[in-house]
Amino acid sequence: MIVTDPAATGQRTAFAPNWLGRLGWVALVIYVIYAGSQLGFSAERFSTGLEHGHRFLVRMFPPNFERWELIYDGILESLQIAVIATFFGVLISLPVGLMAARNLMPAWISWPMRGVIALCRSFHPIIVAILFVKAIGFGALAGVMALIVASIGFISKLFAEAIEEISLKQVEAVRASGAGFLSVLIMGVQPQVLPRFIGFATYQLDSNLRNSTMVGIVGGGGIGAALFTAYQRFDFDVVLAILIVIVSLIMVAEIVSGWARRVFQ
Amino acid sequence: MQGQVSPLASAAPQGDDSRALVLRGLRKEYRAGQPVLRGIDLVLPGSGLTAIIGPSGTGKSTLIRCINRLVQPTSGEILFRGQDLAKLSGRSLRSARRRIGMVFQEYNLVERLTVMENLLCGRLGYVPAWRAWLRRFPAQDIARAFDLLDAVGLPGFATRRADALSGGQRQRVGIARAIMQEPDIILADEPTSSLDPKTSVEIMEILHRFAAERNIPVIVNIHNVELAKRFASRIIGMTGGSVVYDGPPQGLTEADLKTIYGGENWME
Image (cartoon, rainbow over all chains, first blue to last red; front, side):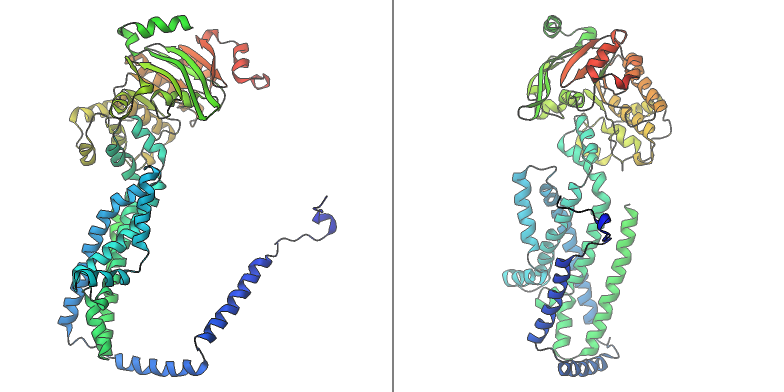
């Protein structure tokens, strides 16, 4: 017998040592230290950094709302970009997500659709925004298009996964009544996935709001342009004002989306 | 048995026999070379309650699911109302399915829909999708649904959500949904297996009552031999994918049960 009874030898171990795991942790720590030294991190670098940071913070206060009209216009445009992008993004994601669901669709539809979704997900929204700015010119349209692509990449995948997790027993029963495919979707699938879809859509609105403040930096419209200009001109008090407005906008969005989720529970 | 098949299948459908179901050489292999159904030949009359008994994994569920084609038979014929159900597809399959009601072991209600919406699911074969989407079902369907809720003993449950019901209540909704289809036959796949003994009897009583009152033939897969004997007018015993007993409940002997379930220790 190869395996000896541990009870007989008096060496019972409650927790088996995971040597491979420990080795992994040690390797990770060593790499972090090595990478840090390669990038020139040192104590002096930190202290000069802290000095810079101190001056930066001092110049930020108090926040400067004098040019509130500029901020207001920018934030309004960002909001519009986010809402439009979420609306069309979700609208397109519904059929895309359905077609990517492997339990309802044959492989020759679902796999190409998964490819499309992966393509939409493969770039950060900023890179997509740069592409659209170059392709169709400066302005909010480029920002909207970039965020639509980002939305499709993200929520189509979540939609598809939600559909793949439904109970097929309920679908089977609806199908057994002689219902057509559309009716099966409406009465058998939709009731099972609707609350999760609402959750994903509100989450995407939230995410698009944050991203819409950013696409302006590369010329995609919205508050990002004003923010970038303020940074460039070292108007750090204006920067702080814009940041405060963005934070409050995101918080309001959080409250609204929480409320929407409750309504559709 | 082969002698019975031909006259029924060839005769013009009339009276009760218009709802007769004829299976000929029905085979199903989920994996090639491993048949679950080994050529079933059966003639089921156009009325009354027929119980199919047999051990688990013997193909009872597969047999019932082949009839409404939730499972695709490998070969064989399923003759019902002048059609071979095994050969249908697309639109013709859906219009055949809407005349076949089905009751499931785990009820298979759409959990997040109300009782009324679940009942109206039984009308989806008749109602266009946009009407279902907007919940604009014909008034007579809704009236029928209310009548059926009364008939299965659930008055006042229309607006309850299905996930708020007990097992027995769910199965009553499941039966009412099947009847909503105005079916020519009802298939019940172990409708009592998830229920307690008392509720099981109540559910079988409801199925038996509908079979008699509305003259709808009912085919029930059932594990409980006592319930089968009590409510069925005919019993079919299956084992290993073949029919080994076909006759009245009174004729079912201990020897038959031994053939169906194998061994005898369990009978004591």
